[in-house]
Picture: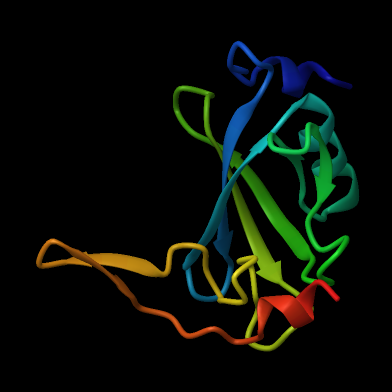
Length: 130
């Protein structure tokens, strides 16, 4: 059963980088990490489970914020060292993937040598984690 997990090229810490892409828009919503258990749980539940490096524990996306990620597909790149999830961001309309209360974690754009914020805060982050 776990042979598909053996094909992933885990880094020296047992992690693989993961990109979460919104199914409908193609927007890249976030980047995170998974260990073997997180990837297995994600496939089993069809909801994203990541590995939190800062907390050193599994992190079921949405467990605190209510902003779950429904997983539609799990893909791996040609080198077997990056995972791509196609997801629907749940819990708020439009979906909030970022802990800052924005739709995407990639809300800063380099323009003329300055980082500009390109997406509004959809919900105050203090109210997300009350």
